[in-house]
Image (cartoon, rainbow, N blue to C red; front, side, top):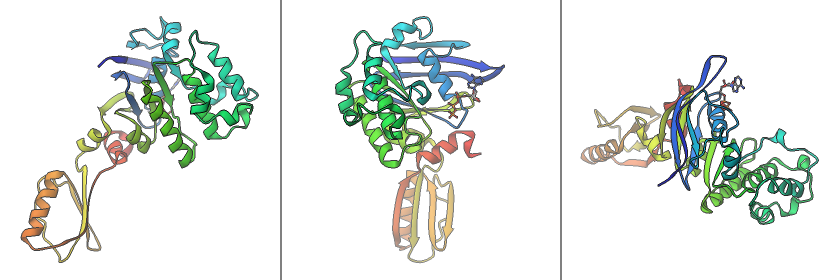
Length: 298
Ligand SMILES: Nc1ncnc2c1ncn2[C@@H]1O[C@H](COP(=O)(O)OP(=O)(O)OP(=O)(O)O)[C@@H](O)[C@H]1O
C-alpha cells in the first residue's frame, strides 16, 4: 500500500496556543480517511496544512511525496479541495464556475461529465446564489474534482443538508472513491463517518486520541456490546465476564459488555431455565465510542 498523504508530528499554534499538537497519520491511496473531533479540536487546521493553505510550525506533511508549502503549485494539481461558500461569487452560473475552475488545470477532467454524474445538468445556467444547499454542495464536489485529482479534501461536506441530500452526497463520495480518488473527509457526523470511512482519526485538543476502522473504534471501548432482554422470570445475573454495566428498566435488562458476556449470559439463562424475551444484541454506536474517546463526553 502507498501512502498518498503523510502527516508526521504536525504542530501549529496560534498566539502561543497549540491547536495541532503532534498529529501523525498516513492516508493510503484509494482510502476514505475520516478526521473526527469536537469543535475546535484542530481538524480544519490539520487539513489546511495538508492543502498548503497554512504553514506548519513543526512536523512534516507530504502529498504524493510533495511538500504542500514549498511545492504548492504541484500539490494543487494532485489535490482537490472543497471551496467554502464565501469563495464563489453568487452571480456565477454553474456552467461558468465549472469552466473557470477547469481552466486552472493543465489536464482537467471533463466538467460536463462531472456535472452529469453529480446531477447538475439541469442547473448549468442557474446562478450559484440561487442554488439549494444540496445543489451548492454538489457543485463544490464537482469543483474539487475538476482538476482530476488523486486526493480530494472534503471538510464538513454535509453540514446543513437535509437527510435526503446528505444520503445523496454520501453516494457521490462513494462513487468518487470507486473511481480511485483518495478522500480525506472532515466530519462531525458519526453516521457519516461510520458509513463512509475506511479509517478514522479521532482528534481532541490537537492530538489524535484514536486511529482505527469505525468497527475497531467501537469495539475498543469498554462495553462495546449491548445486550437487552426481558427475562421470563426474575433472574440473578451475578458476575459475568467482561460485564461493564447492568440496567433494569421495568423488567427490561440492558447489559454492556463484550462477546464473552453474551456467551456467558446465554448459558446462565439456559441453566436457570429462563427465557430471554425480545433478546437483542447490538454494537454500541460510533457516537458512544466518540464520546468515550474524546473529552466531549466528560
Ligand atoms: N487563524 C486563526 N487564528 C487564531 N486562532 C485560530 C485560527 N484558526 C483557528 N484558530 C483556533 O484554533 C482552534 C482549532 O480550530 P480548527 O478550525 O482547526 O478546529 P476544528 O476542529 O476544525 O473545529 P470545528 O469543528 O469547530 O470546525 C480553534 O480554537 C480556533 O478558534
